[in-house]
Amino acid sequence: MVLFTDVQHAMVTEKALKSAGYLVRLVAPPPELRKGCDLAVEINLVEKPGIERLLNDRGLAYIGIDPIKIATAPLLSVVKVTDFGDWIMVKAGNMKITCEKASGVIVNVSGGGCPDIPYLHAELIDRRISEVPRPKDIGFTLCALNLDRAFDECLTLRLGEDEA
Amino acid sequence: MMLIAGTVPIKGMPLAVGRVVREGEALAIDSQRIPCTQGTGAMISAALATTAYLGLEAPRAVIVGDVGEGRGSRELYRYLVDNVAGLSPQVLALHYWLPDMSQTRQLCEAVEGCKERPVIIADAASMYSAKAAGVAEGFDIFTPDATEIAFLADPNATHPAYIARHLFESDVDRVPELARAACENHGAAKLLLVKGAVDYVIKDGDVLATVAEPSMPALEAIGGTGDTVTGLVAALTYAELEPQEAAIIAARANRMAGKYAQATPATKVKDIIAQFPSVFKDYLCQWSNVCYIGGDGKDGRS
Image (cartoon, rainbow over all chains, first blue to last red; front, side):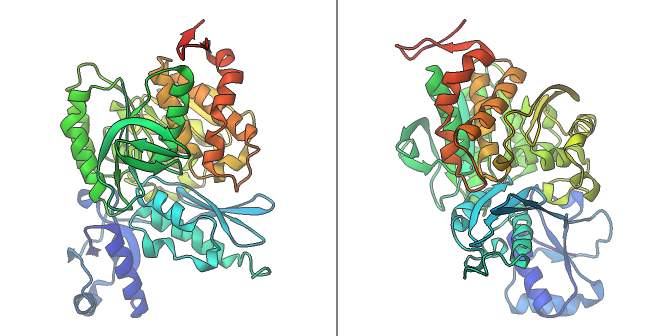
């Protein structure tokens, strides 16, 4: 498991490792290592040398790579979709994103409690979902990661493509 | 004094402490202006609308800029730990910040130094960190939504991103069961106001009341409508209503404000907040016996 000081470094590293072809997943670190908003990347330990080299070559910050196998927890991956007629709301964990079907414009973001959520709310609202940065690319926390899962589901619904 | 603490989404904004003043569509605290949008701004706006209507002292707020990196949150924790005993608020309402279990425990210890123990209310990540730190039972009111009650019920989760799948997939009918589990697992405050299609007011695992009317499904989609409920609860508690009474009225007022605003999923929370004075004028006396006398800006209880 690759451990980090903050969630954003874990998200960036997961993206880099997946791009490089590694099979990795985001998980919670063991309870004794948690501060409150934590994320780690689970790797195949036999790939540690290559992964370590990639992280160092790219200057990706991490605390360490430790052979921890127990007491981790997977991220919740369930999404729910609610149809409001002209709008559609997608919920992932504690985060919800609502878009106008015809235009693909994000009309609301709700839920969550970490400090980047009001920031993401301001960045995303009243803009087309196809034209805004992804929450996981500009957010920092687990709430942002949940919002990104809802965002990702919205993208698969191809909202607003008729109008675009 | 009612003290509201939380982060605001303005990068680099320094910590500001002061009485809240409404300036057009924004809020002013010390020399800082913040928008009445989702998050701490919406919560403060709802509390201010309530105290203004009742002629009570406006909330005092401590806010700091943080867009998620955590620097502002750490400043906020430090300020509260160092100053809460000296301020000794009657109501302490905690809101958005980067959850930190260690700092939350320190804050709970610092609160013990207050002249009189404040009513402590937590929503958003301050609720997450209280539960994760194992100090939830030291809080008076939590205002979770249906997902967050599943988080409070899950003894192993330190953030809603990690709640067990079977708990997340539960429907609204299971809220009482999850609330009981949260209480048994020491993950709940003394009183829970669970926001959802039906709002539940729960104490020690027992359902005291439910609020389902007016039915406003669109409110779930509107960012900040949970924050406004928490702001209403805080201000009504500050007005010396019993916590459960404050919770019931807050749930009713929020729904009614949504109805007055003719809310759709695209409505913005500032349009909901704008309706609170009309809702109070029409219903607060009937719901609570807190009746505005008029003229001198004072409130009175009939």
